[in-house]
Length: 189
Image (cartoon, rainbow, N blue to C red; front, side, top):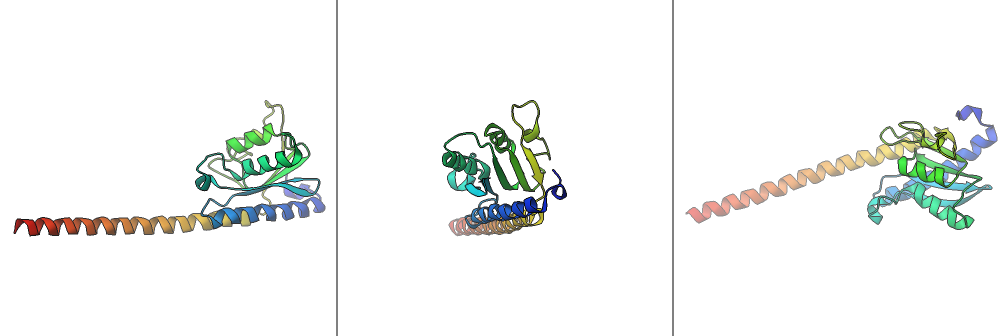
């Protein structure tokens, strides 16, 4: 659904809850994870929150959306999340989009598109595939700039860190080789 097709009241609510999802993304950033956050809202209340913890928890399943779904289901006392809306800072991947369909969530609000794994309309549209028994309404582009910026900031810092680590490894390898060469030279004397 187009952003401008929503009522001003709904647009205001979408901004409020996407800001909450961004706070979750900041938590992921603070622990060195890819900064992705999600919240699930029911009846005007956040009932599930999650942020990316794949590296921290050593599992592929620790995506923001999956964590938010698990918490929301616990709060609702049911696996069905009918009447709920998920706000996510990055378009869901195939696993998360499938879990959202399975949870029967009504609406998914997306911050930034994911050109490499997006299944809310970028690469595939699992969320609205009519061959499934459930489809979710999609609103994309809510706080897109802020959601994109946090990801860009993370990956820029990661590239800088990786470059520094590579330089340090090369320096350590060069020092080790110089030491071996010096030892070999002293042994031949």
